[in-house]
Image 1 (cartoon, rainbow, N blue to C red):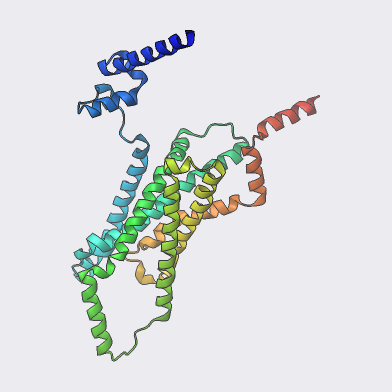
Image 2 (image 1 turned 60 degrees about the horizontal axis):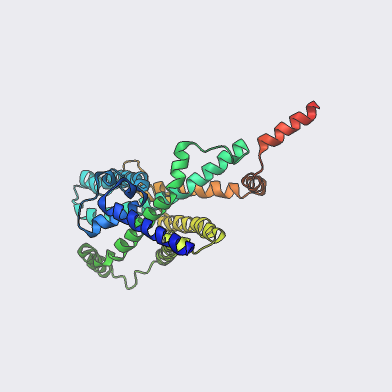
Length: 327
């Protein structure tokens, strides 16, 4: 009888709490999700307190960074690809803006955002190696940066997907068809039966294949970032996918850009107005990140970093050594 009465009292208490949520009493703050759901179901405006929360707070810095990178890269590419021909040869090529110029902006922003995902981890490792402990707090800017790595990676995957879509649309453009007819006419005019260029064919096959592989690995990283998928993985599995496969994706995308350049690195004609082409600027940060990651894999640094992350503190050891020497 006592247990039945206790269950009855609990049920009555729960019912009173639900009623208090509907009536809007202060107890509604205990269940904010249910409170918000009731207002949405009744097609009413939520309380003013719920409107004060920030919209996607973790996405503010990554989105602003992506927008700034996109704007700067667009201006740089616009000056090189559109303004330069107009000034030097009075050639109107503004038709390049919707597809060609945009498709040169997308890969630069994508690979830069992907490099920004793994750069804070390298900075954090250097911070721990310098101080010899994992118990010292990171600077606020680095801590905030590390908490936004997921958003940077998803934005990088979005820009990479857009780059793939734009690249697939190249043969569908009317300007490409006109250029194809002009190339065919020039070949007939020069009496060439075969315009096959061996190294250019290999370049195209290799860099397209690397781009597809890099996009596939990025898709795996994006899928494992979904909370329902990440919760089904162990910590070791999640860390392996996000770290090992993430660096693999960055490596594939970097080689993809390098193979795209091929022999353009030594072509002086690529430096319009003494400015380097976009692919040279795009690979600088990824190469630096991969080089720093390779340095951290050296046994002397890797073992010390593993000891620090396992709890070893250089400051404590040195303090004990001083005390022992004093005795």
